[in-house]
Structure formats: C-alpha cells, structure tokens
Length: 322
Image (cartoon, rainbow, N blue to C red; front, side, top):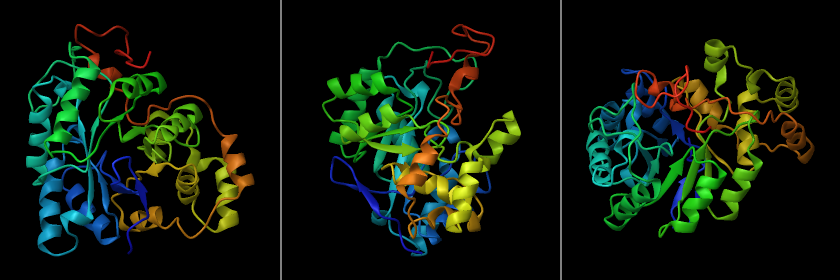
C-alpha cells in the first residue's frame, strides 16, 4: 500500500496527511497493530507518553526496521509531552525518556499534550488522579521545547488541544513557531475560526478524533456520533463509500491532517482508502450544517484527573477549558 500524500510544515518537513493513532490501544495489541499499519502503508504514527504503550511500540518499530518493512527515515513520528512533565528542567528528560522507550533518536514532531501544567509525578509515572496544578507557565515550557529543536531532539514542535486565544498568544511569543495544533475537530464540532486561524499562520491542524469519537463514545456516554448521521449516510451511499470514509475525506478537503485509530487491518485499509474520490461543494455544505458547536471531549478532557486533589473545583473535577 502506498504512503499518503504529505502536508508541508513551516520547517519544510513533510507530514503524511493520514496518520495512524495509538490512543485507546490496549497492551498486547498495539505492537501488532503498528506492524499492520506500517504494512498497510501508514508512515505517520501519532503517539503519546500518557497512552502507556511507548515501550511496546518501540519493540514493534525495531521489528519493522529489522525486517525491512520500513526505515526510520521513511517515518514521521509524533510524540507528546504530558501535563506533569511541563517543568523546564523536566521537558528534556521527558522527551529523552519517551525516545528511549521507543528506541528512537529523535521525534519528527513533539507536542505539548494539553495547555495545563501539573506537578511532576515522575518520568515513568505520568500524573493521573488527584492532580495538582504546577507553577510553570506555558511559555516557559515552550522555551524548553524550542531548546529540543536546537539540540536536534525534535525536528518540529507544536501543541495539542490549544483553543484560539492560547494558540494566538503562543504565536506572538514563540521564537520557533508551532508547527501543528492537534485538536478535537469533526463533523459535529467543526471549529471554523480555530482551524482557519491556524492555517492562516501556516500551523498544521490535525484531528485526533476525526470520526467524533466513534462507536466507543456512543456506547460509553450514549453520545450522538457523526457516523450514524443521516446526512453522512446519504453522502456515503452516493459515493459507494463508508460513513467513516466520508467523514475523513471531508476533513482532508478542509486542509486538516487526520489521525484515525483502529487495531483491525480491514479498518486501517478503509481509513486510508479515501484519496480516490472527492466530496462536491454541495456535499461539503451539507456536512457544514451538522456543526453542533459543542465539544464532545472525545480526547478526554483531563477534568476527572483532579478528583481527590486540592485543585478539584467541581463535583466532576476541574475543566481546564472553562
């Protein structure tokens, strides 16, 4: 299977526009899934320390390199700095810890996972539960990220889950501009202002939940999902494509990089098979009418992590986006 086309970042580096996401991948299944994804042609892997699967992915990558499935140079690897690793002296240690887990020498892209600093809980034990707010500012963390670029540890740096005014604030202060903002964006939460702002500043937008959370969100929270929306079902039928393929294609046509997730080989192939058709302007306008202007918090807002701690400010925890 051939690799997907690429988005050219501000640095000139090429980021494949279809990535393989590793969130919600269970131990024992993520390693084989990464191998299958590489065989299916995925060359962009989206990882994060807090997912707890870096070591297993590292073993899979070594296997892929040893077996000649792919070379390191052919891959684009994204990693993420967790909330409890924001302190300036911890940032380089956290990056090194993740790279050691992954058996890699550098990240192609390294992101601040959430715009919030928690007190450090140890490199091997990323904080979750009774979380306490730290005292390192986001711009100080960013300066430490910039040092990683200068030292060759990361080729590009960016952010994740940054709303409009925070990303603009960063743009006004950054010496090295953010290459990417990875956000919740899908047919039910289209975020036109944020997406278009980022693109106007040559900041790549990547969608960590391009299907709106999928069936798992529907089953867990009884949440409506775009996959079952009548508009998507109708457009899919017209093209002979699946609802997932229509949703993914619509994001690509907005200039957004997509990070679909599945451990099933046939779904991996389906999620990548979206370059042989286009949605019409009328179809894109129909999808635009689906926007509900509300976050489905499909990459879980770390709200509940504050429960039981001194910085818990509601019965549900603390919503950092309030």
